[in-house]
Length: 269
Image 1 (cartoon, rainbow, N blue to C red):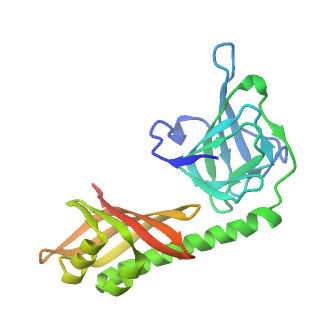
Image 2: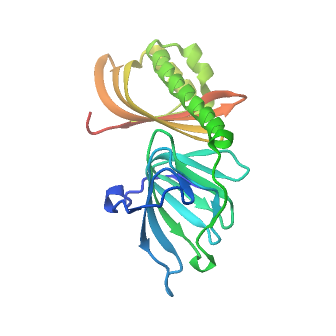
Image 3: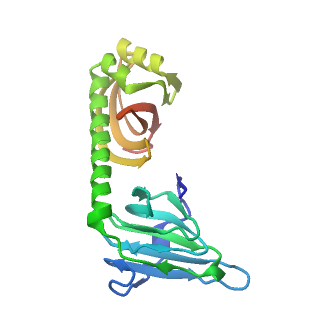
């Protein structure tokens, strides 16, 4: 499985209609709507369809003889290949389901999931179905672990803003990786430079009002996005600006450390 994140600007979920409700409990659990957009022909040997999953809806174990690519256009859910851990997927992710690799995917218990699916090499067949996913044995355990790690990172990020406001550079020194980078509107700073700025009050991160947070964990790396309204003292003047702050964490010896922090100023509050 190969997964990456980027903005799918062309894939606005509102562009396509919801499709038809699939027959109950046929190769899935929960409500799933499907719409076939492109059928394979003599020129194009692939099929394209959209899918909409209610929260908690999941497909049975299956495989695609020709492979499949999923473009996650909205919501949040899970993807798992047989014998591998469950992974979180959300809007902007691209999943490559390799040919004849047994897997399943579906929505989280708390959010819906939408995607655009491309079935490649349609002449090899569309889908081979297997047994249902056993949530009690597979999903619940991994789900609890993922939710726990997400909450741990969200709490760590909140505490980090407090440490920055209090100029607690000793604690921040432990949190920041030695090679950490801090990207401000005025340029990129090293760990040493950032800590010195905080300690001296060159930038006083007085208060961060967190408005929205999302987390994506991929193996030992986590990407946390914070939409905040930041009150800071810069050059003796108090300024209030809205930012999206991208924080990248790496897990080392069971502990999360911050590898980079990037500030992107928003045009509106």
